[in-house]
Image 1 (cartoon, rainbow, N blue to C red):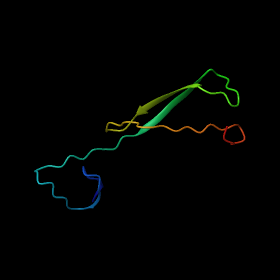
Image 2: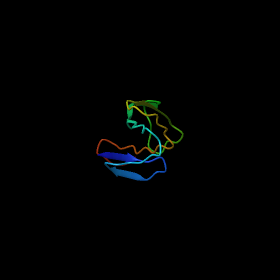
Image 3: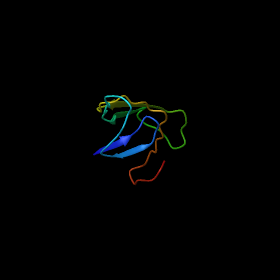
Length: 82
């Protein structure tokens, strides 16, 4: 059984797929991992703006990946958004 996304963006699940060619390339997906996050400086006060945050990512999957956007939510030790 094949499960995945076709080049046109449609999802596919089944046991027969006609590509019009003699072969089909099956690619494993990308696997993006956040290795670490570095906040510069080490101490940030409530309401402080323009704080540099560096994200170190790794792709341990078999396909290429592109990060188009990233949203971060920072919490205090009680789990409240800050």
